[in-house]
Every structure is written in structure tokens, then in C-alpha cells.
Image 1 (tube, rainbow, N blue to C red):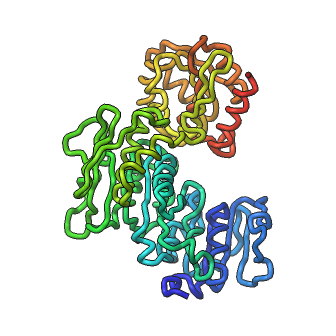
Image 2: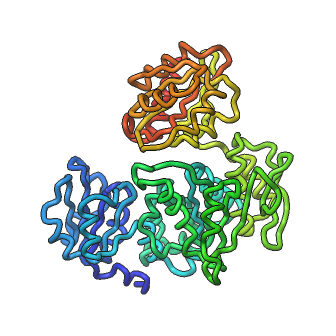
Image 3: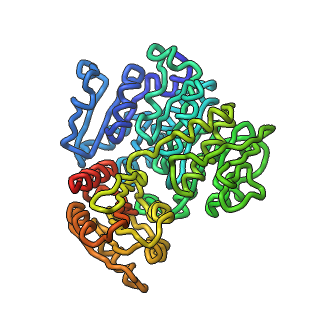
Amino acid sequence: MADRFNTVKNKNLLVIGLGKTGISVIKKLLDICTTITGIDSNPALNVKDAFEGYRYSDRGNLKIILGKNIPGEKEILRKMDLVIISPGVPESIPIIRLASKYKIPIWSELELAWRLMSDEDRDRTIAVTGTNGKTTVVNLIGKILDDSGKNCIVCGNVGLPLIDTIDTGNEYSDYQRDLIRVIEVSSFQLEHVYEFKPHISVILNITSDHIDRHETFENYIDLKLKLLSNQNKNDRSIVNADDRNINEKIRTIPKSRNQLPGIIKFGLQTKEGMDLFYENNCIYYTIGKGNGGIDIKNILLKGKHNISNIMASIATAVLMGIDNKSIEKTINSFKPLDHRLEYLGYVKGLRCFNDSKSTNPDATIVAVSDFGKEITLIMGGKNKDMDFSELIPVLNKKVKNLILIGETSLSIHREVMKGTCDYEVYRCDTLEAAVKKGFEVAGPGEVLMLSPACASMDMFKDYKDRGNRFKNLIFSER
């Protein structure tokens, strides 16, 4: 077995959180580690289904513990060499605090996968983060690379854990050859990374989100910038120069040798000093010794925010050596992803949009920005201690009716009522009631939009569940 697996070989491993990521870690390392203990706070978790098709029950080195109260935490930890924490698990829980006290290394799955990769694999990594647009960008980059004939895979926070792409010696061989990994990275995943160093990093934007988890906006910004903190002069970082938070933080990074990657800037607001800029339906770039223009007048991705997303994708593609003709062809045929300002068509005389993926105020600001004052907006959801103050003036310009749902409905209603409000505000107990109210109050030819500005887990499994429920309700009105 390759030397890189010495990190975990013959070690006792604790995996905290048995969702998709935790299960993938266990499956990948069960034949390598001495023992693996997996724990999850959900006592009803169906572990057999999670390991379906995988023979684990006859192995004596795996132990699964379910439930909020874990017996013998101290004894469990005393035997452990390494803790892997899944993204959804907060580091404030007692067993994580105890592991820190015992000075047991705590890694995210991202860090673990990175340490199991060869140097050649690491040189073919692209990592994308940002508050909004990550999933669109990693999928667009992946499509550009795939259409050009490159061997690539989109992974990370987008669905397939990075650990699943790692070859432990006898799994993938041909599939792994020259594989480019395009990795979506969340702030949760960056909490416990230490050596992770993508060859190309992309930072799209940083606006308020997940304050309930990270406590302050400053902490959240710092986590996002960890994506480039280990990069050096041989690496590249593509950054949105329109974003004040990104610019201010990058200026504080020490510019001593080998500490700062080559920075590639893109922006919509200015051309001066930009490596990529937009003008007259074309994105122009100068990157290294190459320069050119990509015609985007026929793109299916709408909105200024998507022009920024396309800029980031073009910069990455150019660095990967993709020719302009291939880039342009893919970009102009790339369709919007589900739940991201997804147009559902005319229903009962209304233009209906599913923007369930907008899980923070800035995403909703972006979603409504290209419309006139014609929107009946369904908004609200799980409370993440976010600041809605910047959203309120935008609602005044764009909204005719505001329909609030979820945990945040009361707090948003109070925020709205603090100022001058020239639109109607309604509160509904369910999404079904909100959609019904939307069809009642919206005028002919206007817009009915779900763009919650909040997470979904107060009422739904996730944003996809919320979006699909909304689409079914809309289509049932046809």
C-alpha cells in the first residue's frame, strides 16, 4: 500500500456523524485502520441501509454507537488516534471538546482525503467556495472540462465526498488516471483543515451566513479564506474583486515568498486591474501569457451574479488549458441547476420561479435584482441568526406582496415593520398556504417566487425537499 496511507494504517479511528460523508470514510478505511468507531446522535439511523451491499457485519474492527448520550466517552477517546468530524456536526459537542482536551487530532473529511492523495493528484485539484454560487460553478467547471475531453469529477460538498474519489490501491486504476477533482467546499468543511492546499482555489463571494454555527461574521470570513491559506507561488487563486470582504482579507495575507498564490481577479464593476472583465456580452481575459474573449450573449444562466460565476469558471478553464471555442460552446449550452432561480413557466397567468437554494439574505437579493416591482415573494425558514437589514430596502424596490413562513417569519415581519413598507405582508403556517395565498394576491403577468433567504430544516429535509414541494404545489395549479 502506498506510503500516504501510513496516516491511517493500523490506527484507531473515531468517525463522528454517520451521514453520507461519515459512511464513506468508514467504507474507505475499514480494511486499513485497526479499528473504526462510528457515532451518530440519531438513535433511529438505519445503519444496515447505509452499508447496503457492503459486508461489514462480519468484521470485528467496526463499532457503531447511536444516540445522544454516548456511554464511556473518555474510554472511547483514550483508545483513539484520530477523529474525523462530518460537516454537519458542530465542534461544540462534548465529545469534540473532550477530544481537543486530550489533544487527539480532529480532521474534516476534506483534510483526511487530502492526506491520502498522491502529489500528482494534488496538482490536479480545483476547490471552489463562497456563500453563493458554489454548486453552479463547480458543475460548470466540470462540464467545461468534461466537454473538452478531460477526465474530471465534481465532488465535495456538492454530493460525492472527496474521500470517495481516493484510490486505496485496487479500486479505480484506469478511472483515476489524470483525474481532475473539482471540489465544492463549505465553511463547515474548512473548520478542521490544516494541510489542504488545492492547486487552484476559487472564492466567489462572502456574505453573512451560518452565524449560528460560526458565532461571528469575521469567523465566517476567516474560514472561507482558509481555502488559500496553504497555497504558495506555484498555485493560483481566482477571486471576486467586487467583493469587499475578500479584497480586505487578501490584503492582510503575508506576501513573503511561498505564502501567497498567484491572484487572478475578476469583476463586473470595473475593468481596471482585472484579469477578467465583462463588456458588451463578452468576457475578456488576460491570464499569464494568454488573452482572449468569450461571447456569452446566448447563455441560459440569467442574472449578473451568473456572469460573475461564468468569469470564475472561464478563469479556471483557461488555467487548465481549455481553448476558447470549447469554453464558449459549453457556457452557452449550460442550463441552470434545479432550485436556483429555476423558471417553472406561466401558471394561472403568473411567472413562477423556484429559488429554494437561496438560503441567506444575499442570495435572495441577487435573485430579485433583475426583476421590476412585480414579485410576490415567499420567504422565511430556519433561524441562523442572520442579519436581514440589507434585504429590507431591496424588498421595497422589488416586492408587491411578501409571504413569510417558518421560524424566521416573526423576526422578519418585525424587521420589515420597522421601516416604511409599501407592500402587503402575510404570515402563513405552511408552504401550501403560502402558495395558495400567492396565487390569490399576485396580479396577472407578475412573478410568484420562492426565495427563502433562510435554510430549510425547520420545515423540510433540505432545500431540495423544499424546492420540490414548491414545484409540486405550483404544477398542481395548472
